[in-house]
Length: 253
Ligand SMILES: [Fe+2]
Image 1 (cartoon, rainbow, N blue to C red):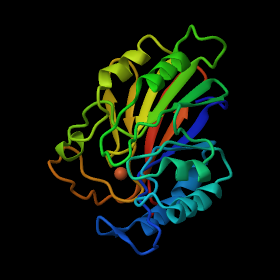
Image 2: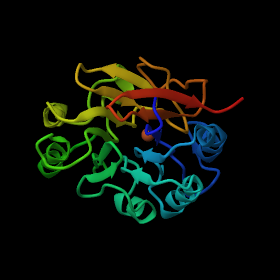
Image 3: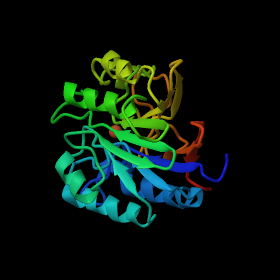
Image 4: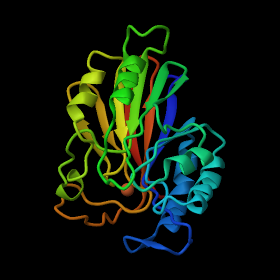
C-alpha cells in the first residue's frame, strides 16, 4: 500500500466497568485490554475507530478510563455507542461520536460515516429513517464534493454472522441499511457486537466484524464459547484508490 494509505485501528467491545476488578465472562476486561495495547501501539494507527460496548455498565468512570488509555495514542478517536454504552456519556469522553445523527469525518481520500444503531435497554440494533437518509446522502456519489471512498461503521451486525447466540440480536431491517449503500462510494462496513473477527462476502463491500478486546467467541457456535487466542482488534489499511486490506491483531507473546 502507498504512503497515503490511512491506517485505521478498530477497537471494540471493551466491556470495562467502573470498578477495576468487575469480571466480564470470567475475565478482567481492563487487564485483557491492557494486554493488547502494546501490539496495538506497534501497529501505529492514524485513527482509532471505536465500535461500541466500550463500557459494560455505561458508566462515566469506565468510559473515562478507556478514553484516557486510548487518548495516549495521540490520534483522532471516532466512536459509536453499543447496547451497553450510554450515548451521552460516550459523547462526553469521545467528542467525535454519533449520538442522534451520523458522524461524518473526512480524512484524505476517505469519508468515515459512523451510525448509532443502539437503543436504550435493547440488545438488538435499529437505524431510524433520519439516520438512513443521512447515511445515503453521505455515501452517495451525487451528493457533492467529498472523498472518493467511504467506510461505514456501526455497532450491530447488518447481516448474519453464523453464530446463533448473537445472531438473535442483529441490526433490524438490514435491507434498509444495504439499500442506502447501493451504488455508493462505500467500500467497507465495520461493526462490533459479535465478539469475533469475520470477513464476509456481500458482493458489494468488504463486510467486517471486529473482535473484542475483552473476550471473543469461536465462530459458528450455538452459545458463546471462549476463543483462547485472547483479546484482539482489527487493523484496516485504506488505500487512496479505495483498496481495503485488513488484519487481526492479537496481544504480543
Ligand atoms: Fe459486546
